[in-house]
Image (cartoon, rainbow, N blue to C red; front, side, top):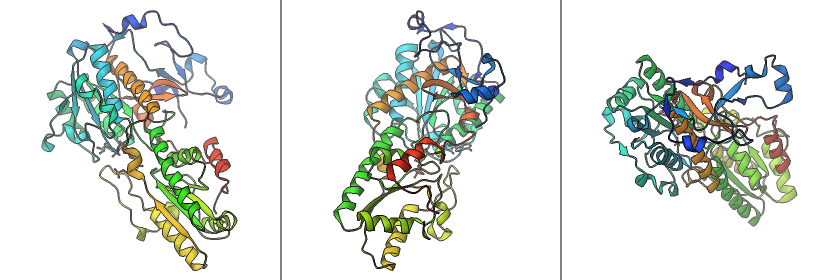
Length: 443
Ligand SMILES: Nc1ncnc2c1ncn2[C@@H]1O[C@H](COP(=O)(O)OP(=O)(O)O)[C@@H](O)[C@H]1O
Ligand SMILES: O=P(O)(O)OC[C@H]1O[C@](O)(COP(=O)(O)O)[C@@H](O)[C@@H]1O
Ligand SMILES: [Mg+2]
């Protein structure tokens, strides 16, 4: 992705004139390997060759604004009113992020007017009649133990003008949006409407996606929990496959356009022999096609485990296999590659008269509805804290990201400019090939 300095500029609502209540914590901090000073920058490029290709002085290198608390802030905490909304598909850790935002606002900034909007962007629209939730420290104290989101969610576009009407009616100063690429697109529309009205409302996002498909976050929150959960299905598929002659365990995992869950779960549980992801097209038929390679594997080892991401192999499906169209948010509805593979493998082995015992496992919703694991909980807290620091200092139209292990501010237009996908020439896919031993391509 071509990124220039201007793409990395973060908008602010105005100068910071209010002393931060976190001032005492910040006073004696020095820049260290784990602490970037608030006026320093995090360099975008991380290889010598990329740096060498830039012809500018170090201060002009493309760089992110570091996340973190500022000594001076924009909003006066005693007069600040905050809204929080969660949108799109579920993801482990949503409640952890809500909790982190609320507790940071209440305990450190002394902000106590925090409202949760129900069911995504519908929560702002009068005709849906959704009540708001008063979010206090007590309400959120143990929500991190539950999966899902206490605020509910939804898909489907809403009118940004109506959303901003609602924010103005309620005198909201800061809106936190927790959601994926669609949510961030929606948030950009809200932010533009706010700017057109000349209002001073900060819109700050915390990127959410179990598919891990948003740029500038090394790994999205909940992703580690989700792929850990998926390993249980791979283990089950292996147990089933090894228990019967020519057993095949076929596991279908989420991943609409990016195969990260399939790759990571398969690496974590190296029982997988075949991993199919959207980024690497394959053929079923022919000498090097998947079916013949599977046949040879069964002749050799008598069992196989195959992991398929939901967006894989769309090239081998035809319209009669369902799918097509879009969901309420405009996301393309994919044809079901898992069921299609199950049928094609079953028919193929029946056709050549070879015994097959195929067990099909689809844990899709089971892996995204669980509570976050401890690693993700820590990550969620840190994202939540940094989102609060950013918003209180008047940053807007940005999401909190993590780039090369540093927490940074990412402008919303940049965060959604391109989807983050598995690079077929990258080291992750190379590891999958090394771990599974599957051919580089089934073509
Ligand atoms: N292009 C868009 N413009 C405005 N709002 C959008 C856009 N795409 C999605 N949204 C809204 O964002 C919310 C969540 O989007 P969705 O794509 O379902 O999930 P996610 O944010 O997880 O990608 C929905 O309310 C949806 O209508
Ligand atoms: O059935 P639903 O709720 O529409 O969700 C299915 C989709 O949700 C995802 O987890 C991603 O959702 P988001 O874009 O909302 O993060 C995909 O992997 C999957 O295609
Ligand atoms: Mg999405």
